[in-house]
Amino acid sequence: MREFFNDYVQSLETYIMFRIKETVTKITPELISKNRAPIALSMGAPTANPPQKAIDDLKSVLDEKGVHIYSTPKGEKYLREAIAKRMKTRFNVELNPDEEIFSLIGSKEGLANFIRILINPSTIDSEKEIIWVPDPGYASYKEMIKVSGGKAYSIPLLPEDKFMPNLDRVYEKFINEGLNPKKIKALMINYPNNPLGATATKEYLQHVVEFCKKHHILLISDAAYVDMYFKPELKPMSILEIDGAKDIAVEFFSFSKPYAMTGWRLGWICGNSEAVKIFGKLKSTLDSGLFKALQKACAEILNSVEGDKYIENANKLFKENQEIFVKGLREELGWGEFNVPDATFYLWLPIPPRYKSAVEFTDDLMHKSGIIAVPGDAFGEYGKRYFRASIVCPKEQILEVIDRMKKDGFTFN
Ligand SMILES: Cc1ncc(COP(=O)(O)O)c(C=O)c1O
Image 1 (cartoon, rainbow, N blue to C red):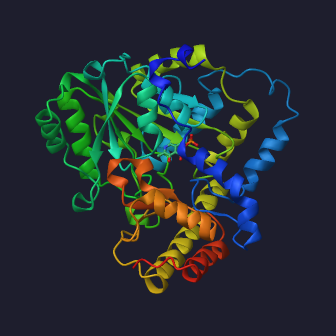
Image 2: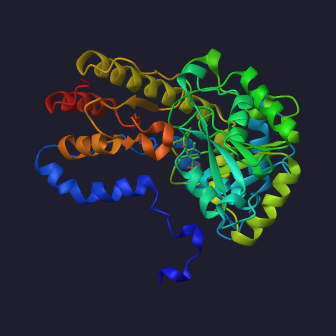
Image 3: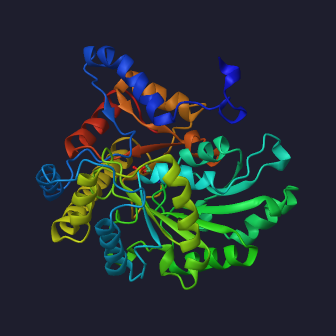
């Protein structure tokens, strides 16, 4: 059977988060029997319900006429207009809802399909077109590029650069490695970053836009976490706020994280109109748009007081969780040096030195304590001695995590 499938998927693994989920399901009875029922610090999926307004709006439109038939892949006009309004009020970015915005079945779908329209696939390594990706970065990027017949090239995000690498230096390194700059199709950025929680300054975003323009590289900004931040003065920006960015960039947004709607599957792409138009052609052959009831509820929440309050409160709770977890790690478990992010609901933590690998550590943590975290390797080669904890669960569970780690001997040294 295997031989029927194309070369690009031959080495593809089930996505790490679902692999972890399958293992957890298998070992749950054993964990429960030893009073270590699983606590998930793995999925980047807020566990609270979405805003009540969105749930009520969704229910109320279910009886409306015409709501159950096909929408359009682009998204209903009222959704695109609501997105344009949000982009204006949140970022002061002007967008034409007919030409510069397109709906997505979640940003993961959008990113994967956008990559498909960029890459001319090849099975020969030296011929493969290249997309630069942040490393550590969202685990799906590399796989999306691989199954599209391209190759991902890691841009190292290092603490000494404050996670904002100088791209001219990366370019130099790329050339010195004997790689062909003509093969570079696009550069991906993701601020605030998964898994680091790192944010970018305006100056850095300007540098990224300038770099892409200079080398004629398409810029893909993944803004899935743009609304999850803890300091008003460090409010993350849209790349489209940078002068001239629209000439070269598209940006991906998601309803998943800010409104705890990971299961609803809604997002949008916006930016360069030509890129959006070409993307739209592919989308029109692949899917038939989103359930209109979801579009209505999402259009309503986007510019509502309830929506903004919800985000504000969720960020407050994530910050509280972060403080509790950081205090526990430092004061009770001996974790010393690590970065405490100003954004996202992730913590990126070094593994204790006695472990040979991140997988060995997260496996031990899962089997002994029922605490489910993600090994850093999943996020790239620069993640090898780290693990990611997603602190989206209730506060009591964070306290329970610290307690279990202490009882079960998970100190740093
Ligand atoms: C950086 C990043 N981008 C995109 C996504 C996909 O989100 P969704 O498909 O739910 O919009 C995720 C999900 O974890 C993510 O971490």
